[in-house]
Image (cartoon, each protein chain N blue to C red):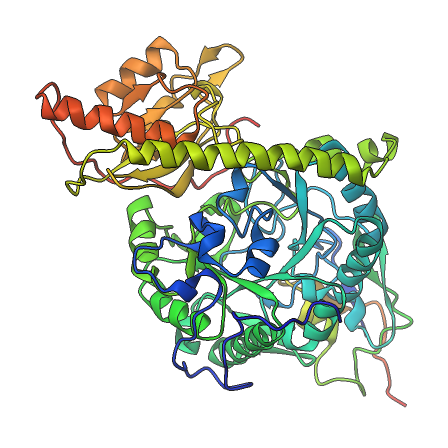
Length: 516
Length: 73
């Protein structure tokens, strides 16, 4: 029971209340209550949050937007069983090019998982976080989940442990979660109203019974709220994931945000529904669409000032390895791990992470100095897309990018607001012409795209679509590059060289990558 | 009759295995199967067969007509 600590973030909750929302107690970096604060998960500095919370999140890519540029995570697929059915999930599907939750290529036993974690930790010293996120539900497989955590706590004590659950079994395992020092728990909460829930969850398996419809949703929401309260009382950091399903829970998510904030949720992550007929999910087959980029941003913006909002989630697979947005799991299959000689060198890992911290400080300093050079704020705000492969820099070739990070820039701020997955434009040295229009669609709401390099053909096409390709800030820190570009852009507008036009909406990518 | 698992639609998720009150379910080559001689259809244990209720894929756990109905003692 090491992790129960007195913390300023523990809200004073009426214990074990039902789902009625109490007066919001602030949590995490929300304590300052500044209206302009974007989010803890997004860009909070140590000054915004109590030091013990910063200590927990600073190297956690999923809990800190800033950390996600530098630190990697991995998931081990030891938990295949699930205790509820969701209309957006189909467990029969596995494709190596497919990246979404619930999908894995290989399930592991706890022993295999531990071996894999140690192998990855030796190869990738910036891997600081190990999560169990399925492919089913971590807590529907308690024996396998906790055996994995037990071994890792002994063999890799510096790795942060976390798990993700639908919450149905959560109240039964809160004590055990505390016992293994699991200090980050993610709960997927898509509704607090059973009538909404009945449209998302066809059934649950609870107390040896299959329960359907509204009754199922009622039990689920009670258990989720109870579990969240119990974790908050014990000082465990919680993230709430919500899937935005247009027409079903889009406006309702504001209520969800209020309810989870009131119960001390540290972060709220609103993710777009991934829905394609080819996935074979109920929603995919019924033609339920996912949200557009602007629809997603609208709901996220409406929830700001509620629980801290997270926008950098990549909805990764339950066996993903690497930086968010990157997946190196194919380098660590069981066969490959078996052949590796694994030396768990704690010192080497610490030394590497020191280097990362230095770089991170340089990134923050670059942003500050760029901000100090900005002109007065005239209210102009634009989005820019950035090609990066980590380290917080504009360091990816346009044609090699499999995602673009989206930054909102004004004269006084540059903030990460999301990311867009795309197919590689460049396949083995030449551009794929049919891929380019889909990239343009994905970043159509942006005024510019900052890249390390870009070929002549995509450059012209982007310009024709009204998106300015920018190579000038190659290998600079992202925020500094975005702010410098924006200052230059405004200067050109002021000189009358170009005119400032509004951009349209963008599409969120749904299907598998065309090529891995 | 006992229940059986249609292995072509079994995802190998293991949801059924710990729910069986008779330890009749085992894993083989990545999917699960029910030992018919151990299956009691949960009669005397639960209101509904646990493997059927827990399975995420419709029509994957079905009655095996080849085995006579278990008679609860």
